Each structure stands twice: as structure tokens, then as C-alpha cells.
Length: 264
Image (cartoon, rainbow, N blue to C red; front, side, top):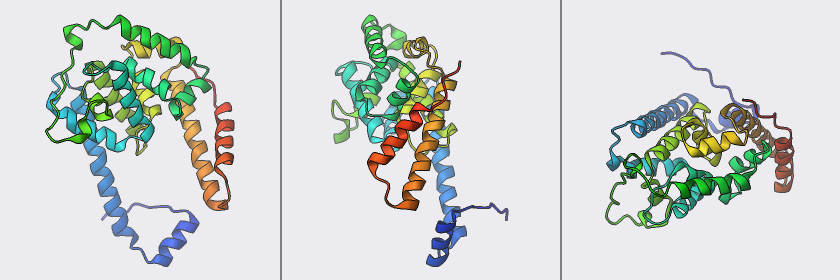
């Protein structure tokens, strides 16, 4: 049977040994679950990118996306649906407006760190949506009918918004999932949604971000720097036991100021 080395911090290794935890079966189960989750995510991405996408899959895919999303991203989906209006299709530009409107998320903080004018981005995205109120047949939504008795599909919820995606918005969501997998992140956040918007270059939202100098490579570098800083602060907090939330936020702000400039 092949062997895989698993490296643990000294304190965790000592705790595992003291607790008498059987490392091999625990790791095997965890890895099996991880492989299954990644496989399911990749199948969902493939399904969302198909030209002959089956709209009946939307409720299942929306549930999978929301189960991996942070609370802030779920709020962004809800805001995007509200921006679109009841029963109206949700476009990539609605995602961009909602990320900025939610405001308290890593994605919008990274935009500002990279010198993007988020107020201007929001107003321009709103104008782009207004210009596209008359949708052609290619942009017509194909939402699935809500399942009876599902309270979480009530109007105004994040899940109801994900059932009203335009084809372009669906591709953005697929790229959002793909980006998180590529970065080996086990969650979906607003930062991944912005990378998904940047990856779908044919959308008005992506064009607006590029006009502000926001490129995929630069945003990824900024995100890598921020997540590395967050990990460092978490480790420091665990080791010292007396790091306050205020100190953590101060250090994160300092890290943001030191992030490398965006490059094309």
C-alpha cells in the first residue's frame, strides 16, 4: 500500500499522540471525503459550463454553492437578487454591485488596496445594468421551478437569486468555484467571486474591473498575500493566547498596505 507523509506542528503531534488517535484511518477517511468533495465540485463546474445546461439542476447546484459560501458571500448573493429585482435575471454586474454594497468583505478590501475606486465601479455597473434592461433571447434566464415546500426558496433569499442567473452569471459562478479549487481553499468567499468575474472576460463587469486596473494576476497576488497574513496571525493567536481582535485587525490592515502592486 502506498505511503503518504503527513507533517504536523509539534504541539498538534504531541496532542494526537497523547490522545491515542489512530492517524492512518483518520487521514484515510479525511482524504477520501476531500476527494469526493472535489470530484463533486468539479462535476458541478462542468455542468454549469455546458451550453446545453439543464435548468433543473439549478436548485441542487445553488445548494452546493451556498453550503461552501461564507456568510458574507451569501449576503452578496441576496443583495444581487435584490438589485436585479423580483423575478428579474441576475447578471454578473449585479454580483459586482453587491460585493461593493456589502462592503465588509475581503474582496472589496483588496479592490481598495489595489487602488480601485469602488464607488465609481458600483455606479458604472449600475449604469451597465440599466442599459441592458431589454434582454435578448440569448440572455433569457432558464430558472428551475422551486421545489414545493422549500422555505429556503422564498423570494429575496440568496438561493432564489441563484435560480435566476443569466448564462454569463452562471459561468461566473462556475469560475468562482474553479478558482477556489485552484487555490486549495475549502470555502467560497467574495474574493473568489471577484476572481470569477475577472475570469469571464466577455462580461461588462470584467471590463469595468479592467478599466480600474484590476487584473487576474494582480488580484491573485494580493489575495495570496492577504491569506498568508491571516494564517500567520491565526498561528500567532494560537501560540500566544492573548492576541486581541483589535490587534489582529491592525495587523491585517498593515498587511493590506504592504501588498505588492497589481501587474497586468
